[in-house]
Image 1 (tube, one colour):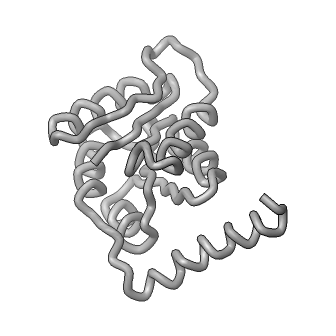
Image 2 (tube, rainbow, N blue to C red):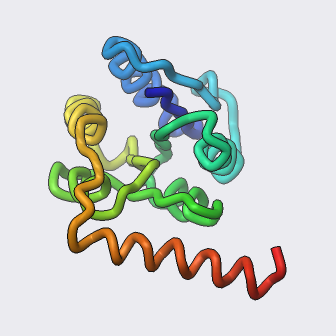
Image 3 (cartoon, helix red, strand yellow):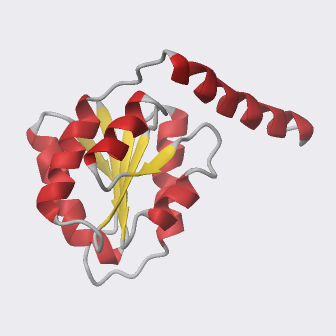
Length: 154
């Protein structure tokens, strides 16, 4: 698996912890920044880069971290074909993959502690889309995205 990761300055320290954890599992990580705690960035720019890398197939999954995770998720979900979910507890983390086939996990460094974040990342990495009754729902999301593109002649 190849994984994209990105954060804003509020989450730099947590990103570095998560990046180290993921790499220790033998997963290749592409880091989209920010690269220091003092580098001010607009988190939407990072979220778009990570989401587009997944859209292109350069990375299989992604992790985005900001203060709450909410802004990263909102932005990433604007990229066609991307499903990003805020994951702050084990149940939502598991369901983001098993029920919603989310390619991007979003977390808030001001919401959860590093040890919980590491646990959730480990859980998210082993979960796969279960299909079943959720398949029709995920297919409907994709169908709607395609209808929008068709209506706009894209």
